[in-house]
Structure formats: structure tokens, C-alpha cells
Image 1 (cartoon, rainbow, N blue to C red):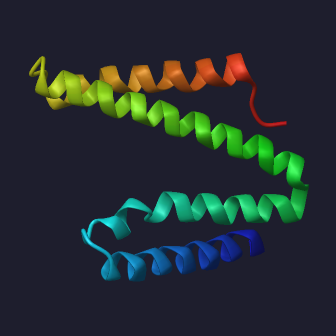
Image 2 (image 1 turned 90 degrees about the horizontal axis):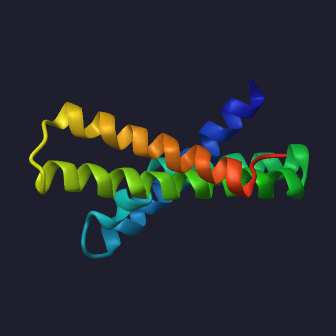
Length: 115
């Protein structure tokens, strides 16, 4: 339970810091770019280092990178299916989700995952 509270507080502080930074910079959407997911990831990695050591956190960070690459592939696929092929949103997202799964688990199987 303490881990979740700590993750909530650290994540909230990082989100707030990026929101303040986003208000000061142009364009205003910059703050949203580094919103919830990166701040929670940073909090999670910090807790992983403290509880499990740097080796575990390193393995965990690689799986986060694989997920980010898979998300980029999902986004490009969904965009092409929607804009170029004019598929319905549900169809495009289902196909793009299959791409996300294939890329994420392909990277995990091919390059390794968490220890």
C-alpha cells in the first residue's frame, strides 16, 4: 500500500512540474506531452531501484522502451489506416492493436525482458 501512495505522490509532483513547465513554454501542449505516463514511469523506476536494485530497474526500463516503440508503431498504423485507407475507427484500432501486440511481444521475445 505504501508503494502505491509513494508512486501517487511522486507521479503527481512530476506531472505538476511538467504542467508548470508547459505553461511557461510555447506551445501550450508541451506540458501534456510529458503528462501522466512518463511521470508514473519515473516514479516506478525510482521505487524499483530502491526496492529491487539497479539491475531490476534497468530490465524494467527496457520493457518500457519496448512498449514505447510498440506504441509508436500502433500510432503510425492507426493513422495510416484512418487517413489513407479510410477505415472505420473501430476497425483501424483493432488492427493497430494487433500490430502493437506483435511489436511489443516480438521485441520482448527477441531482445529480452524483465529479470
